[in-house]
Length: 492
Image 1 (tube, rainbow, N blue to C red):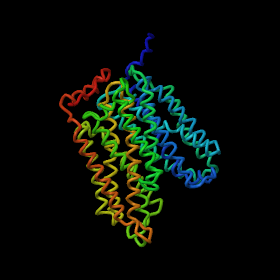
Image 2 (cartoon, rainbow, N blue to C red):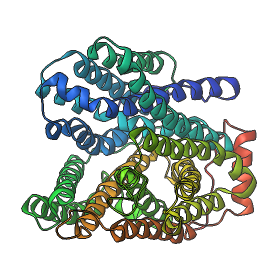
Image 3 (cartoon, rainbow, N blue to C red):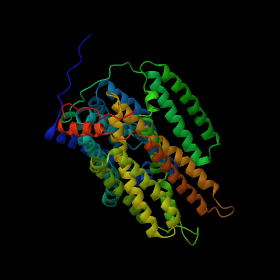
Image 4 (cartoon, one colour):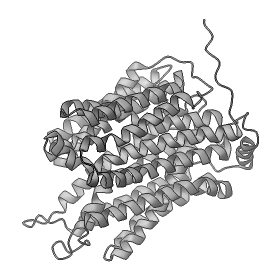
Protein backbone atom coordinates (compact mmCIF):
# COMPACT_ATOMS: atom_id res chain seq x y z
CA UNK A 1 0.00 0.00 0.00
CA UNK A 2 1.37 3.41 -0.94
CA UNK A 3 1.94 5.75 1.97
CA UNK A 4 -0.18 8.87 1.94
CA UNK A 5 1.70 12.14 1.52
CA UNK A 6 2.89 13.68 4.76
CA UNK A 7 0.63 16.49 5.95
CA UNK A 8 1.89 20.01 6.39
CA UNK A 9 3.45 20.60 9.83
CA UNK A 10 1.41 22.18 12.63
CA UNK A 11 1.09 25.96 12.58
CA UNK A 12 1.41 28.24 15.57
CA UNK A 13 1.78 31.87 16.53
CA UNK A 14 1.90 34.45 13.76
CA UNK A 15 1.61 31.78 11.06
CA UNK A 16 -1.62 30.51 12.60
CA UNK A 17 -2.99 34.04 12.79
CA UNK A 18 -2.18 34.63 9.12
CA UNK A 19 -3.89 31.41 8.05
CA UNK A 20 -6.97 32.30 10.11
CA UNK A 21 -6.88 35.73 8.49
CA UNK A 22 -6.90 34.16 5.04
CA UNK A 23 -9.88 31.98 5.96
CA UNK A 24 -11.63 34.99 7.48
CA UNK A 25 -11.36 36.76 4.12
CA UNK A 26 -12.93 33.72 2.44
CA UNK A 27 -15.87 33.92 4.86
CA UNK A 28 -16.21 37.64 4.18
CA UNK A 29 -16.44 36.80 0.48
CA UNK A 30 -18.91 33.99 1.23
CA UNK A 31 -21.19 36.26 3.26
CA UNK A 32 -20.89 39.03 0.67
CA UNK A 33 -21.94 36.67 -2.10
CA UNK A 34 -24.89 35.32 -0.11
CA UNK A 35 -26.11 38.81 0.78
CA UNK A 36 -25.50 40.34 -2.64
CA UNK A 37 -28.17 38.70 -4.78
CA UNK A 38 -31.51 39.03 -2.87
CA UNK A 39 -31.80 42.84 -3.30
CA UNK A 40 -31.30 42.41 -7.06
CA UNK A 41 -33.99 39.78 -7.69
CA UNK A 42 -36.48 42.25 -9.17
CA UNK A 43 -33.84 43.63 -11.55
CA UNK A 44 -32.73 40.11 -12.40
CA UNK A 45 -36.27 39.08 -13.30
CA UNK A 46 -36.50 41.97 -15.77
CA UNK A 47 -32.99 41.32 -17.12
CA UNK A 48 -33.70 37.63 -17.74
CA UNK A 49 -37.30 38.22 -18.91
CA UNK A 50 -38.90 35.95 -16.29
CA UNK A 51 -41.80 36.47 -13.90
CA UNK A 52 -41.55 37.27 -10.20
CA UNK A 53 -42.72 33.72 -9.48
CA UNK A 54 -40.00 32.21 -11.68
CA UNK A 55 -37.20 34.27 -10.16
CA UNK A 56 -37.82 32.71 -6.74
CA UNK A 57 -36.08 29.60 -8.10
CA UNK A 58 -32.91 31.71 -8.32
CA UNK A 59 -32.49 31.30 -4.56
CA UNK A 60 -34.32 27.99 -4.19
CA UNK A 61 -32.04 26.12 -6.61
CA UNK A 62 -28.96 27.19 -4.67
CA UNK A 63 -30.57 26.09 -1.39
CA UNK A 64 -31.38 22.66 -2.82
CA UNK A 65 -27.86 22.30 -4.21
CA UNK A 66 -26.42 23.25 -0.84
CA UNK A 67 -28.64 20.70 0.91
CA UNK A 68 -27.14 17.98 -1.28
CA UNK A 69 -23.49 19.01 -1.37
CA UNK A 70 -22.83 20.20 2.19
CA UNK A 71 -22.89 16.75 3.88
CA UNK A 72 -21.13 15.11 0.93
CA UNK A 73 -18.29 17.62 0.56
CA UNK A 74 -17.87 17.89 4.34
CA UNK A 75 -17.38 14.12 4.62
CA UNK A 76 -15.10 14.01 1.59
CA UNK A 77 -13.03 16.71 3.29
CA UNK A 78 -12.58 14.41 6.30
CA UNK A 79 -11.53 11.62 3.92
CA UNK A 80 -9.28 13.40 1.43
CA UNK A 81 -8.33 16.73 3.01
CA UNK A 82 -10.37 19.79 3.88
CA UNK A 83 -8.27 22.20 1.81
CA UNK A 84 -8.60 19.96 -1.24
CA UNK A 85 -12.40 19.99 -1.01
CA UNK A 86 -12.43 23.71 -0.18
CA UNK A 87 -10.50 24.29 -3.40
CA UNK A 88 -13.10 22.32 -5.34
CA UNK A 89 -15.92 24.24 -3.66
CA UNK A 90 -14.30 27.62 -4.38
CA UNK A 91 -13.76 26.79 -8.06
CA UNK A 92 -17.38 25.63 -8.35
CA UNK A 93 -18.65 28.88 -6.82
CA UNK A 94 -16.39 30.95 -9.08
CA UNK A 95 -17.73 29.23 -12.21
CA UNK A 96 -21.28 29.57 -10.90
CA UNK A 97 -21.00 33.29 -10.19
CA UNK A 98 -19.44 33.86 -13.62
CA UNK A 99 -22.30 32.01 -15.34
CA UNK A 100 -24.82 33.95 -13.25
CA UNK A 101 -23.26 37.27 -14.26
CA UNK A 102 -22.49 36.67 -17.93
CA UNK A 103 -25.08 34.26 -19.36
CA UNK A 104 -28.45 35.81 -20.36
CA UNK A 105 -30.35 32.48 -20.46
CA UNK A 106 -32.36 31.75 -17.30
CA UNK A 107 -32.04 27.92 -17.52
CA UNK A 108 -28.25 28.29 -17.73
CA UNK A 109 -28.31 30.81 -14.89
CA UNK A 110 -30.09 28.21 -12.75
CA UNK A 111 -27.30 25.74 -13.59
CA UNK A 112 -24.89 28.43 -12.41
CA UNK A 113 -26.83 28.71 -9.18
CA UNK A 114 -26.45 24.96 -8.66
CA UNK A 115 -22.68 25.46 -8.97
CA UNK A 116 -22.90 28.20 -6.30
CA UNK A 117 -24.46 25.67 -3.89
CA UNK A 118 -21.05 24.58 -2.47
CA UNK A 119 -20.70 28.10 -1.03
CA UNK A 120 -22.51 26.73 2.03
CA UNK A 121 -19.78 24.15 2.67
CA UNK A 122 -16.99 26.72 2.94
CA UNK A 123 -17.62 27.33 6.66
CA UNK A 124 -17.75 23.63 7.72
CA UNK A 125 -14.52 22.93 5.84
CA UNK A 126 -12.85 26.02 7.31
CA UNK A 127 -13.92 25.02 10.83
CA UNK A 128 -12.34 21.62 10.21
CA UNK A 129 -9.15 23.28 8.93
CA UNK A 130 -8.98 25.45 12.05
CA UNK A 131 -9.49 22.50 14.41
CA UNK A 132 -6.93 20.44 12.57
CA UNK A 133 -4.19 22.87 13.58
CA UNK A 134 -5.40 25.10 16.41
CA UNK A 135 -7.08 24.22 19.70
CA UNK A 136 -8.36 25.76 22.91
CA UNK A 137 -9.45 29.38 23.15
CA UNK A 138 -7.46 30.15 19.99
CA UNK A 139 -9.73 27.84 18.00
CA UNK A 140 -12.80 29.38 19.60
CA UNK A 141 -11.60 32.87 18.69
CA UNK A 142 -10.89 31.73 15.14
CA UNK A 143 -14.35 30.22 14.69
CA UNK A 144 -15.88 33.36 16.21
CA UNK A 145 -14.02 35.45 13.64
CA UNK A 146 -15.15 33.20 10.78
CA UNK A 147 -18.81 33.54 11.81
CA UNK A 148 -18.42 37.27 12.47
CA UNK A 149 -17.02 37.98 9.04
CA UNK A 150 -19.60 35.72 7.41
CA UNK A 151 -22.35 37.85 8.97
CA UNK A 152 -20.49 41.08 8.28
CA UNK A 153 -19.98 40.04 4.68
CA UNK A 154 -23.71 39.40 4.28
CA UNK A 155 -24.47 42.91 5.56
CA UNK A 156 -21.83 44.41 3.29
CA UNK A 157 -23.08 42.45 0.28
CA UNK A 158 -26.68 43.53 0.81
CA UNK A 159 -25.86 47.23 1.12
CA UNK A 160 -23.31 47.08 -1.71
CA UNK A 161 -25.84 45.52 -4.08
CA UNK A 162 -28.38 48.22 -3.27
CA UNK A 163 -25.84 51.01 -3.70
CA UNK A 164 -24.19 49.75 -6.88
CA UNK A 165 -27.51 48.99 -8.58
CA UNK A 166 -28.43 52.68 -8.37
CA UNK A 167 -25.30 53.89 -10.14
CA UNK A 168 -24.20 50.95 -12.31
CA UNK A 169 -25.04 51.39 -15.99
CA UNK A 170 -25.35 47.66 -16.56
CA UNK A 171 -26.60 44.77 -14.41
CA UNK A 172 -23.89 42.46 -15.78
CA UNK A 173 -21.19 44.73 -14.38
CA UNK A 174 -23.00 44.78 -11.05
CA UNK A 175 -23.14 40.99 -10.96
CA UNK A 176 -19.38 40.74 -11.50
CA UNK A 177 -18.65 42.28 -8.08
CA UNK A 178 -18.99 39.01 -6.09
CA UNK A 179 -17.01 37.24 -8.81
CA UNK A 180 -13.99 39.41 -7.95
CA UNK A 181 -14.15 38.46 -4.25
CA UNK A 182 -14.58 34.76 -5.02
CA UNK A 183 -11.61 34.94 -7.40
CA UNK A 184 -9.40 36.38 -4.67
CA UNK A 185 -10.68 33.66 -2.30
CA UNK A 186 -9.63 31.04 -4.83
CA UNK A 187 -6.11 32.47 -4.95
CA UNK A 188 -5.98 32.49 -1.14
CA UNK A 189 -7.12 28.88 -0.81
CA UNK A 190 -4.79 27.60 -3.53
CA UNK A 191 -1.70 29.53 -2.44
CA UNK A 192 -1.88 30.46 1.23
CA UNK A 193 -3.95 27.90 3.20
CA UNK A 194 -2.24 24.69 4.42
CA UNK A 195 -3.91 21.31 4.32
CA UNK A 196 -5.45 19.75 7.42
CA UNK A 197 -3.06 17.27 9.07
CA UNK A 198 -5.33 14.23 9.48
CA UNK A 199 -7.38 11.92 7.29
CA UNK A 200 -10.14 9.45 8.08
CA UNK A 201 -9.25 6.07 6.60
CA UNK A 202 -12.63 4.66 5.59
CA UNK A 203 -14.76 3.75 2.61
CA UNK A 204 -17.26 6.16 1.08
CA UNK A 205 -20.88 5.32 1.83
CA UNK A 206 -22.39 6.24 -1.55
CA UNK A 207 -25.81 4.85 -0.62
CA UNK A 208 -25.83 6.90 2.57
CA UNK A 209 -24.95 10.12 0.75
CA UNK A 210 -27.58 9.44 -1.92
CA UNK A 211 -30.13 8.93 0.87
CA UNK A 212 -29.19 12.28 2.44
CA UNK A 213 -29.56 14.02 -0.93
CA UNK A 214 -32.97 12.51 -1.71
CA UNK A 215 -34.25 13.19 1.80
CA UNK A 216 -33.11 16.82 1.85
CA UNK A 217 -34.49 17.59 -1.61
CA UNK A 218 -37.83 15.89 -0.94
CA UNK A 219 -38.16 17.56 2.47
CA UNK A 220 -37.30 21.05 1.21
CA UNK A 221 -39.57 20.75 -1.84
CA UNK A 222 -42.39 19.44 0.35
CA UNK A 223 -41.96 22.18 2.93
CA UNK A 224 -41.89 24.81 0.21
CA UNK A 225 -45.16 23.39 -1.12
CA UNK A 226 -46.62 23.34 2.39
CA UNK A 227 -45.77 27.00 2.80
CA UNK A 228 -47.58 27.85 -0.42
CA UNK A 229 -50.60 25.54 -0.32
CA UNK A 230 -50.72 23.85 3.10
CA UNK A 231 -49.37 20.56 4.43
CA UNK A 232 -52.20 18.47 2.94
CA UNK A 233 -51.84 19.74 -0.62
CA UNK A 234 -50.45 17.06 -2.99
CA UNK A 235 -47.47 19.31 -3.81
CA UNK A 236 -46.49 19.12 -0.14
CA UNK A 237 -47.84 15.78 1.04
CA UNK A 238 -46.25 13.57 -1.62
CA UNK A 239 -42.65 14.82 -1.29
CA UNK A 240 -42.95 14.91 2.51
CA UNK A 241 -44.08 11.29 2.57
CA UNK A 242 -41.18 10.41 0.29
CA UNK A 243 -38.85 12.24 2.68
CA UNK A 244 -40.16 10.28 5.68
CA UNK A 245 -39.84 6.91 3.93
CA UNK A 246 -36.35 7.72 2.66
CA UNK A 247 -35.27 8.98 6.09
CA UNK A 248 -36.41 5.80 7.87
CA UNK A 249 -34.64 3.64 5.28
CA UNK A 250 -31.55 5.81 5.47
CA UNK A 251 -31.32 5.53 9.27
CA UNK A 252 -31.65 1.73 9.10
CA UNK A 253 -28.94 1.61 6.44
CA UNK A 254 -26.57 3.89 8.37
CA UNK A 255 -26.98 1.85 11.56
CA UNK A 256 -25.93 -1.32 9.72
CA UNK A 257 -23.11 0.12 7.59
CA UNK A 258 -19.54 -0.27 8.91
CA UNK A 259 -18.47 3.13 7.51
CA UNK A 260 -21.63 5.27 7.45
CA UNK A 261 -21.90 8.65 5.76
CA UNK A 262 -23.17 9.98 9.10
CA UNK A 263 -22.70 8.25 12.44
CA UNK A 264 -26.37 8.27 13.49
CA UNK A 265 -25.58 6.97 16.97
CA UNK A 266 -23.15 9.83 17.55
CA UNK A 267 -25.59 12.44 16.21
CA UNK A 268 -28.26 11.20 18.63
CA UNK A 269 -25.85 10.74 21.55
CA UNK A 270 -25.72 12.73 24.78
CA UNK A 271 -22.39 14.11 23.54
CA UNK A 272 -23.55 15.62 20.23
CA UNK A 273 -27.35 15.37 20.17
CA UNK A 274 -28.07 18.50 22.25
CA UNK A 275 -25.97 20.64 19.91
CA UNK A 276 -27.77 19.33 16.84
CA UNK A 277 -31.20 19.81 18.42
CA UNK A 278 -30.26 23.35 19.44
CA UNK A 279 -29.05 24.04 15.88
CA UNK A 280 -32.34 22.78 14.43
CA UNK A 281 -34.37 25.05 16.75
CA UNK A 282 -32.03 27.98 16.04
CA UNK A 283 -32.42 27.54 12.29
CA UNK A 284 -36.20 27.40 12.61
CA UNK A 285 -36.30 30.95 13.96
CA UNK A 286 -33.42 32.64 12.15
CA UNK A 287 -34.15 31.16 8.70
CA UNK A 288 -37.89 30.58 9.00
CA UNK A 289 -38.99 33.81 10.66
CA UNK A 290 -37.39 36.45 8.44
CA UNK A 291 -40.38 37.02 6.14
CA UNK A 292 -42.72 37.67 9.07
CA UNK A 293 -40.59 40.59 10.26
CA UNK A 294 -41.16 42.37 6.97
CA UNK A 295 -44.86 41.58 6.65
CA UNK A 296 -45.65 42.60 10.24
CA UNK A 297 -43.70 45.85 10.13
CA UNK A 298 -45.11 46.74 6.72
CA UNK A 299 -48.70 46.30 7.92
CA UNK A 300 -50.77 49.42 8.48
CA UNK A 301 -52.43 50.16 11.86
CA UNK A 302 -55.31 51.80 9.97
CA UNK A 303 -55.88 48.76 7.74
CA UNK A 304 -54.79 45.69 9.72
CA UNK A 305 -54.86 47.18 13.21
CA UNK A 306 -51.16 46.49 13.88
CA UNK A 307 -47.75 47.12 12.37
CA UNK A 308 -45.91 50.36 11.68
CA UNK A 309 -46.64 51.01 8.00
CA UNK A 310 -42.89 50.72 7.58
CA UNK A 311 -41.10 51.37 4.32
CA UNK A 312 -38.60 48.94 2.84
CA UNK A 313 -35.79 51.13 4.18
CA UNK A 314 -37.12 50.98 7.75
CA UNK A 315 -37.61 47.23 7.54
CA UNK A 316 -34.05 46.86 6.23
CA UNK A 317 -32.77 48.93 9.17
CA UNK A 318 -34.43 46.62 11.72
CA UNK A 319 -33.25 43.44 9.99
CA UNK A 320 -29.82 45.04 9.62
CA UNK A 321 -29.77 45.89 13.32
CA UNK A 322 -30.52 42.27 14.24
CA UNK A 323 -27.78 41.09 11.88
CA UNK A 324 -25.23 43.62 13.17
CA UNK A 325 -25.96 42.69 16.78
CA UNK A 326 -25.66 39.01 15.84
CA UNK A 327 -22.25 39.84 14.40
CA UNK A 328 -21.29 41.56 17.66
CA UNK A 329 -22.48 38.58 19.69
CA UNK A 330 -20.49 36.17 17.53
CA UNK A 331 -17.40 38.32 17.97
CA UNK A 332 -17.87 38.45 21.78
CA UNK A 333 -18.49 34.77 22.43
CA UNK A 334 -14.84 33.64 22.60
CA UNK A 335 -14.00 36.38 25.12
CA UNK A 336 -16.98 35.37 27.26
CA UNK A 337 -16.17 31.65 27.09
CA UNK A 338 -12.72 32.34 28.51
CA UNK A 339 -14.40 33.88 31.56
CA UNK A 340 -17.60 31.91 32.17
CA UNK A 341 -17.30 28.78 30.01
CA UNK A 342 -18.82 27.89 26.68
CA UNK A 343 -21.83 26.06 28.16
CA UNK A 344 -22.86 29.19 30.10
CA UNK A 345 -22.45 31.32 26.97
CA UNK A 346 -24.70 28.95 25.05
CA UNK A 347 -27.37 29.03 27.75
CA UNK A 348 -27.19 32.83 27.87
CA UNK A 349 -27.57 32.99 24.10
CA UNK A 350 -30.63 30.74 24.10
CA UNK A 351 -32.16 32.69 27.01
CA UNK A 352 -31.62 36.06 25.31
CA UNK A 353 -32.94 34.80 21.97
CA UNK A 354 -36.04 33.29 23.58
CA UNK A 355 -36.68 36.37 25.72
CA UNK A 356 -36.31 38.64 22.70
CA UNK A 357 -38.90 36.72 20.73
CA UNK A 358 -41.36 36.54 23.64
CA UNK A 359 -40.86 40.25 24.40
CA UNK A 360 -42.47 41.05 21.06
CA UNK A 361 -45.80 39.85 22.48
CA UNK A 362 -46.24 42.75 24.95
CA UNK A 363 -44.08 45.29 23.06
CA UNK A 364 -45.27 44.98 19.45
CA UNK A 365 -47.60 47.97 19.81
CA UNK A 366 -44.74 50.51 19.61
CA UNK A 367 -41.81 50.73 17.25
CA UNK A 368 -39.43 51.39 20.14
CA UNK A 369 -40.60 48.30 21.98
CA UNK A 370 -40.33 46.16 18.85
CA UNK A 371 -36.80 47.45 18.26
CA UNK A 372 -35.82 46.68 21.87
CA UNK A 373 -36.98 43.09 21.44
CA UNK A 374 -34.97 42.90 18.20
CA UNK A 375 -31.84 44.08 20.04
CA UNK A 376 -32.20 41.31 22.64
CA UNK A 377 -32.80 38.74 19.89
CA UNK A 378 -29.75 39.83 17.93
CA UNK A 379 -27.35 39.51 20.84
CA UNK A 380 -28.68 36.05 21.69
CA UNK A 381 -28.44 34.93 18.06
CA UNK A 382 -24.81 36.07 17.90
CA UNK A 383 -23.73 34.09 20.97
CA UNK A 384 -25.34 30.95 19.52
CA UNK A 385 -23.90 31.58 16.06
CA UNK A 386 -20.37 31.54 17.42
CA UNK A 387 -20.57 29.09 20.30
CA UNK A 388 -22.62 26.25 18.77
CA UNK A 389 -20.24 25.37 15.90
CA UNK A 390 -17.21 25.95 18.13
CA UNK A 391 -18.38 23.45 20.74
CA UNK A 392 -19.51 21.04 18.03
CA UNK A 393 -16.03 21.06 16.51
CA UNK A 394 -14.47 20.38 19.92
CA UNK A 395 -16.79 17.46 20.67
CA UNK A 396 -16.57 15.85 17.23
CA UNK A 397 -14.37 12.74 17.02
CA UNK A 398 -10.96 13.24 15.48
CA UNK A 399 -11.22 13.10 11.70
CA UNK A 400 -14.97 13.86 11.64
CA UNK A 401 -15.05 17.61 12.20
CA UNK A 402 -16.05 18.38 8.63
CA UNK A 403 -19.09 16.10 8.50
CA UNK A 404 -20.11 17.14 12.03
CA UNK A 405 -20.21 20.81 10.98
CA UNK A 406 -21.87 19.90 7.67
CA UNK A 407 -24.72 18.03 9.37
CA UNK A 408 -25.18 21.00 11.72
CA UNK A 409 -25.52 23.39 8.76
CA UNK A 410 -27.98 21.06 7.03
CA UNK A 411 -30.14 20.78 10.14
CA UNK A 412 -30.30 24.57 10.43
CA UNK A 413 -31.44 24.79 6.80
CA UNK A 414 -34.04 22.06 7.33
CA UNK A 415 -35.28 23.78 10.49
CA UNK A 416 -35.72 27.03 8.61
CA UNK A 417 -37.74 25.34 5.87
CA UNK A 418 -39.91 23.55 8.44
CA UNK A 419 -40.60 26.76 10.36
CA UNK A 420 -41.32 28.67 7.15
CA UNK A 421 -44.05 26.19 6.25
CA UNK A 422 -45.49 26.16 9.79
CA UNK A 423 -45.50 29.95 10.03
CA UNK A 424 -47.17 30.26 6.62
CA UNK A 425 -49.87 27.82 7.78
CA UNK A 426 -50.39 29.82 10.99
CA UNK A 427 -50.81 33.07 9.08
CA UNK A 428 -53.09 31.39 6.54
CA UNK A 429 -55.34 30.07 9.29
CA UNK A 430 -55.52 33.55 10.83
CA UNK A 431 -56.92 35.37 7.79
CA UNK A 432 -60.22 37.08 8.59
CA UNK A 433 -63.05 35.95 6.34
CA UNK A 434 -64.04 38.44 3.70
CA UNK A 435 -61.23 40.92 4.35
CA UNK A 436 -58.14 38.86 3.52
CA UNK A 437 -56.38 40.50 6.48
CA UNK A 438 -54.26 38.39 8.82
CA UNK A 439 -55.38 38.79 12.42
CA UNK A 440 -52.77 39.79 14.99
CA UNK A 441 -53.29 36.38 16.60
CA UNK A 442 -51.43 34.82 13.68
CA UNK A 443 -48.29 36.84 14.40
CA UNK A 444 -48.69 36.24 18.13
CA UNK A 445 -48.73 32.51 17.42
CA UNK A 446 -45.47 32.83 15.46
CA UNK A 447 -43.78 34.76 18.27
CA UNK A 448 -44.89 32.11 20.75
CA UNK A 449 -43.51 29.38 18.46
CA UNK A 450 -40.18 31.22 18.16
CA UNK A 451 -39.97 31.65 21.92
CA UNK A 452 -40.87 28.00 22.44
CA UNK A 453 -38.16 26.93 19.97
CA UNK A 454 -35.57 28.66 22.12
CA UNK A 455 -37.03 27.12 25.27
CA UNK A 456 -36.38 23.72 23.66
CA UNK A 457 -32.94 24.99 22.64
CA UNK A 458 -32.20 26.05 26.24
CA UNK A 459 -33.35 22.71 27.66
CA UNK A 460 -31.26 20.84 25.10
CA UNK A 461 -28.19 22.88 26.03
CA UNK A 462 -28.73 22.07 29.69
CA UNK A 463 -27.83 18.50 28.69
CA UNK A 464 -24.41 19.63 27.45
CA UNK A 465 -21.88 18.37 30.02
CA UNK A 466 -20.45 21.04 32.28
CA UNK A 467 -16.86 22.07 31.78
CA UNK A 468 -14.82 20.41 34.50
CA UNK A 469 -11.53 21.82 35.85
CA UNK A 470 -9.77 19.24 33.68
CA UNK A 471 -11.67 20.47 30.62
CA UNK A 472 -10.82 24.09 31.35
CA UNK A 473 -7.17 23.20 31.92
CA UNK A 474 -7.14 21.26 28.64
CA UNK A 475 -8.42 24.29 26.73
CA UNK A 476 -5.89 26.60 28.38
CA UNK A 477 -3.08 24.09 27.81
CA UNK A 478 -4.01 23.97 24.13
CA UNK A 479 -3.33 27.69 23.91
CA UNK A 480 -0.02 27.34 25.70
CA UNK A 481 1.08 24.27 23.70
CA UNK A 482 -0.63 24.56 20.31
CA UNK A 483 1.46 21.84 18.70
CA UNK A 484 -0.13 19.19 20.88
CA UNK A 485 -3.67 20.36 20.12
CA UNK A 486 -5.39 18.19 22.73
CA UNK A 487 -9.11 17.67 22.43
CA UNK A 488 -11.04 19.09 25.38
CA UNK A 489 -12.74 16.29 27.29
CA UNK A 490 -16.23 16.32 28.69
CA UNK A 491 -18.18 14.00 30.92
CA UNK A 492 -20.34 11.59 28.99
